[in-house]
Amino acid sequence: MANLLIKAGGYQFGAEFHPDAPKTVEAFKKLLPYRQKVIHVRWSGEGVWIPLGEFKLGVDFENNTSYPSVGDILFYPGGYSETEIIIAYGSCCFASKLGQLSGNHFLTITEGRENLRVLGVKCLWEGAQDISFQLGGC
Image (tube, rainbow, N blue to C red; front, side, top):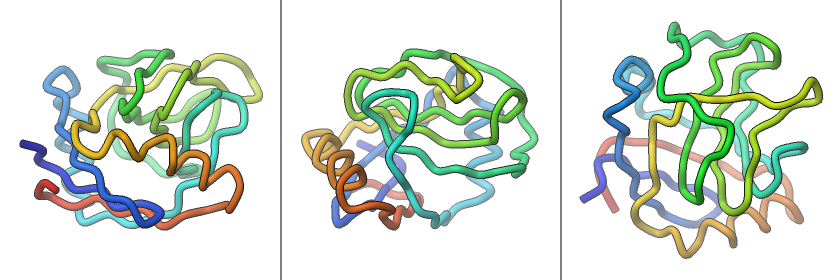
């Protein structure tokens, strides 16, 4: 069963924290419940992202990847580009205008994955969507 409920663009998703990113998971849990806007990525392919500017979560790289699978959620702690959260809904290579990036894989969507592509396309054609994260499953 999922331990995190994500609501975005009228859809609901259940997600599980990734055990190989314990510092990122613990720091993110302190933000919960968390609300933001999600928009379509510009350089990474099929994904949506939450731009966070200069925000610091206080973590470094752990369990990081440039190639998230469908449903993987990465946190980029900043450095070459702004801090951000990215959610892959299809083929994705995490990048910015400065080139390839890698982010901490700290969450995986396990429920509602059939609506990820629909959410991604909605962000692409309709723009920013509200997104929220809270403890509890679907």
